[in-house]
Structures are given as C-alpha cells and as structure tokens.
Length: 319
Image 1 (spheres, helix red, strand yellow):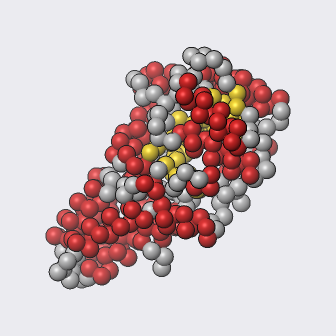
Image 2: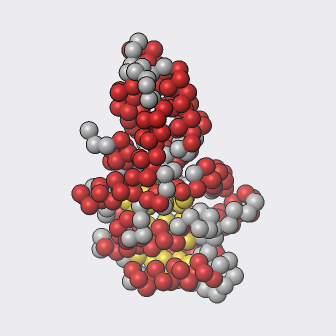
Image 3: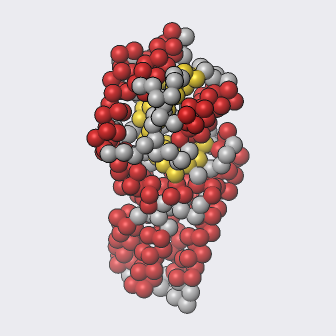
C-alpha cells in the first residue's frame, strides 16, 4: 500500500466538506429541474444536460452520461424521478471506472529499485503547483522517504522563493540557482545531489507559462533529456496540476499541456472553494489520464490520493 492510500475517517470528512459546495449546487439544480415531475422524460433529460454542462462536467462527457440514461429509460420503459440520483451515481461511477480514474495505484513508492523516483510537475502559474509540490514532499517525508525539490521555475523569483519556503517548512532540501538560470541545469543539479545522497524521491518544479506550444514542448523536452543524463529512467511521472475552480479553463490547460508533453497523471486543486467539482469527471473522461490527487484545502493533509468510489460517495452520499 502506498504512502497515503488508506482512506481514513478524517480524510473522508475532508472530502465530504471539500465537495459540499459542488454537491449543494448540483443537487439543488436537479431538485428544481424535477419539481412536479414523476417520470424521467425528455424535459427532465434536457434540464439534466444543462445542469451537467453548467457544473463543468463538459459537453462531451455530459452527452455520454445523458445517452446512458436515455438508454436505461428506454430499456426500463418507466423511470421515476426518485431514481434519477441513483442512476446518475451509477453512470458517473461507471464512467470513472472505464477511464481507470481512481484505480491508479499510489505507485510512487513501489519503484524504489530504481531510486530516486522522479516527478516532474507542470502547470500554469496560480493553479497551486508549488503548494501541491510542498504537500507531496510533506507526505513523502512523513512516510519516511528522503525528498529533494528542484526549483526549475527560474523565470519567476516568487516561484523559487515559495518553493524554498515550503522546503524549510517541510524540512527537505531545495536545489536552486540564480533567477533566469537554465531550468534544465537546475534539474541536473537536483538529480545529481539526490543521487549522491541516495534520495528516494525528487520533485522538479517547472515554469508555469502557457506560451506557444512549441516553446513549451522544447523546454520540457530539454529538462527531461538533461535529467536522463543523471537518472536514465527520469522522469517516472509527469504530473499536471490544474485548478478545479477555473472550470472550463482547466480543460483548455489540460489540452495544451497534454499536447506539449507526455502527462502521466493529474492533480486537481482548490476543489474545496468551488461548486465546479464536476470538472474532475469531465477531465478524467476526456483525457484518459488518471486524476491521481485532489486538493481540498490549505492544510498539509488536504492533498488526497483520488479515490473514485470515495469521490462518488461524497458527491451523492454514501449508500
């Protein structure tokens, strides 16, 4: 079992609280849409489609869900509105399962035969990228692993300073260079230090600029190539951090970064302050890349491994 895979009562309470705004908004809209209705008919489905889209589930994913419900209504002949929530729950759960979201193992500590385990973190400025790195470092260290952080976002002094603050807070070393230094050089130094000190995990922060795709691709490719000179298997993971509160903007960012580099996992942050939690469902479905972590608050423990079953339970209420 991985370092924070176990879903404790405290984590469940954090998840329930973090998704409360999404749940209240989502089911409030559904309740209003079915007032006076006894049967799931075309009007109810039209309203449900609008609710899913405005909850940032995304148009394509919404159409999949509506099609599934239509097929069930057609098959079962009569579906009353009281059944709608349970049907929605089942279809959203099935969709997440098909996309392997929530099934990803916490494999970050399972590959220690090839130390260090290297995570390259990508994402635009302001999504909670550096905070996510700090929380990951904390939880790795809590699990007894030695961690090195690399401040390869050298284009913003604030990014380096913020990572250094997190490093001090967590008690892990941060490798940095001067402002404007070559990001690949920082990554090289970080991995060299980590290897020399037999570190378990290395997390590399990268520049959060969504400039043209070619420039972004070249920069990230260079960082990867330089890291492989020190650690041939690096990076083990390319983690894309997205701000869940931005809704559809998160989709666009995911699109740009998945075109620019081989993203292998995603973290969706700031779900506790928004009613747009439906974005997790859409992103999982559209990009077929596992959502590995979700951010549910400012606390060190508020970054959780994404569990599909627990997510659906919190959104719909535990059976």
